[in-house]
Image (cartoon, rainbow, N blue to C red):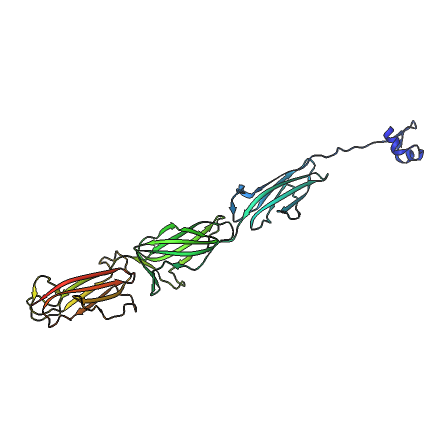
Length: 361
């Protein structure tokens, strides 16, 4: 009554205006009260699909779940120290937040009810949607580039610079596809020097074929393939081998023959020839069963005793030759004991030599 009196005062007209008067002349008033809401909403934030927020990802959204004893009326989000922006409140108490930026960022979310009670929660997300970029390939010192092939003796290092500005490089993979046989896959080395990162692929002999390299970053983005030896790349591929050319030396006659014939015969290094033979030279840079990799002949020279070395008389760089035949006629009309040496080198730098002794009466 004191409260009512405080509200209405002692003026009778107020009672007539605001109160009900019963049949006994008593004024009656109905008072209404509401509970004060002091309960803050509940709010959780988690990466969609239970992704680990300590790791990098190439696609991300955040699942927001919220509730309140009366009802959530407003929902907000902000990135790092930026300003809050308002989100849509859904009746099912769930909102998917999609406005995530590249890089590592902190996201704070806030839920608010009608009474102004608030709840905040924060999580960190790492997003990288940019794939690494592979630069131009470089080849180890001492290689030879000819006929659109990269050729090297023993082993070849291929180095490819990588541009990766986001999550960092997880791994580099390569595939070696031979001209014949089964492709081989492996993990390449990643070399870091200051801010420069380089992928290195080591190719041992024997190999002739193409090379494909890709790089994957920590978020799972995969670079475009870097192909060495494919249509449109300007290269046929790489050749790595350590098989020196072989030399066969035969004669045009037997030791007792006075004249030579047109058919090669085995050279005798012990018997004396009645007349000096013509020597038939066969140089071959391939295995008879084609099992070995060969780059082709690069040079052939011959000499008698310690005399001048003479080239075989052709340009081996014009086209790839895996075998070559020529004749040495310089012994004609001579007598005595002679050593004849044929030196060879292939395009990879492998060297071979064959020396025979010829006795002429």
